[in-house]
Image (cartoon, rainbow, N blue to C red; front, top):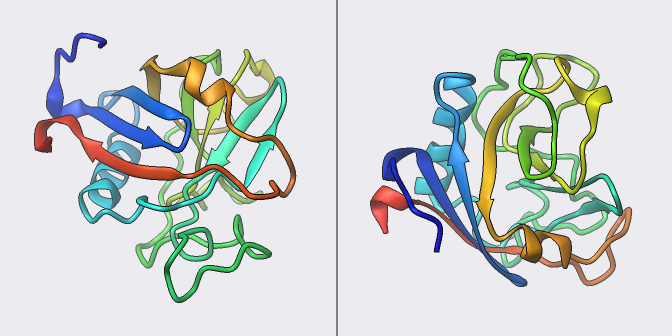
Length: 169
């Protein structure tokens, strides 16, 4: 297992394909890191599907409203259209590049519309640089992310089994 140097700023995500460890970047995107940790601690991401997965690009998840299996509001046809009940976040764009394993917030065309959805890059995606908020980097388990079922939308999607802050495990 990857060495966890800062448990308060590390996520352990169990997916239907296996474990993924994400190092958070609170100095880069403090508001977004705080939101991800808050939702993780609320267990909001547990059961959420990877609703949009594009080969050689990224795997998107985090719709805690319409993408959470077992929830009353779960609607596979609407997964990707929802967020949390918390307010949208102000953009925290940076010069950190979108490379393999980058964790970044999904949003609408409004730069300040990120809420709970995020994506993990399979490969370098330089056209996203300075336009989406980077908040973390996969430090273990990219092989598991690579195995997530592809599609737009995904048929019988993989999901987040659990997402926890390492300090709480």
